[in-house]
Image (tube, helix red, strand yellow):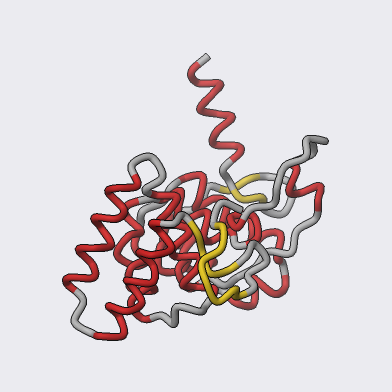
Length: 197
């Protein structure tokens, strides 16, 4: 039974390749493909599958995390069939659906914290990258939000740049309120709005 579960998980988290087979890519190859802008434009479905592989495998490799951070603004244009996975069950569309790299970084968890924090420090706080970094942090610390508050407070204290401190304080405000400055469509709201979308 255990081997059947492992086989199903490996099948579900591998990338489709020509001929209907699935390929389980090593981290360095996955990072290289995630950095391929041409692939993103020419085959968005395969590109989305690569992001999903990083999410499901929770690859904490710094190269994969860096490639995903570069994709924080990548917005997936999906079909309802692909979103629902062949089921008829209706569910809300979340930020993680619209911006799959955000979901992948959230699933990777704490190994992604340093690079997410760098996005927050560099700002600007009215960018999609910033909002998706806050959303990923909210997800990472969802079980114990006080750890997230403590993490951001320590980042604020250790920040050397006034702009970075200001950005981290804006992130902390949104984190505390469990809200973001962007709606699910990525539209800037100017103030914190619900991040639970």
